[in-house]
Image 1 (cartoon, rainbow, N blue to C red):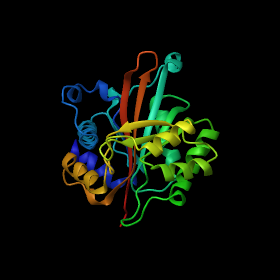
Image 2 (cartoon, rainbow, N blue to C red; image 1 turned 45 degrees about the vertical axis):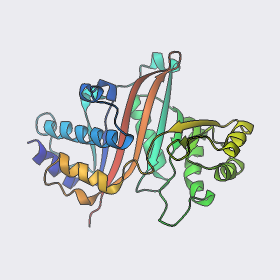
Image 3 (spheres, rainbow, N blue to C red; image 1 turned 180 degrees about the vertical axis):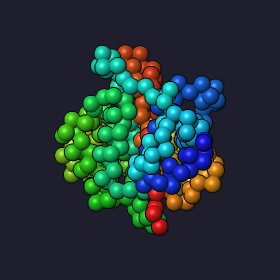
Image 4 (cartoon, helix red, strand yellow; image 1 turned 90 degrees about the horizontal axis):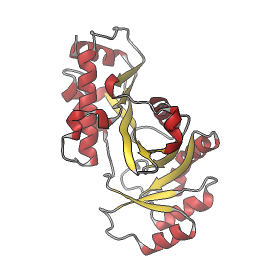
Length: 271
């Protein structure tokens, strides 16, 4: 069956949840030189789709599902409950084509995939704004409220932001019930931490971290392109990525990465 079966399942589904599992279990990716974050995401989506579609018809029935789960079984790795206290489970969430309500879905799926009750830290990348519009506190508020609810419900311990300047970080800090514990700064846009941001973060006990993610880690066109390349003749232009979550599991005492992966959800436009 292969790609024909995969195409039929995709055409019958309304949503697609793609899980890479632990990338450290993927021999082919470990041998490659470190790619940019965007290239890594594309590679992971393509390899997961290709591997998944090759198994269709062999060990999966052809029942049409509203939510299609696309995973590489041998890469899925849940955390041993006995080791949980020794590990830090962190995630960064990129909202692509959805609203704040998808944050709960993303966190629930991450907890389920890793076999944990809560995530230690979740950082949210700035949600996409329309061209010519600047990111504002008003725009951020519904997303932050969702994260605060998840903290209050003990699904997340600490929440953080990414790419906020001092003005916006201060506005969020003063408004928020659950204060941001960290703010990521992209060193491609500033080689040195802005002094006003550094001073404010120190005063309010906000950890400043660095990252090298592009402004748009996974855009609609890129997702559709990799879907088309992975499964022949699929109607890729019907599929819209909603969000992408990248997680890492770190051994606290040694600072080494035990597990790293992506979870992506997309929806199919019926029209």
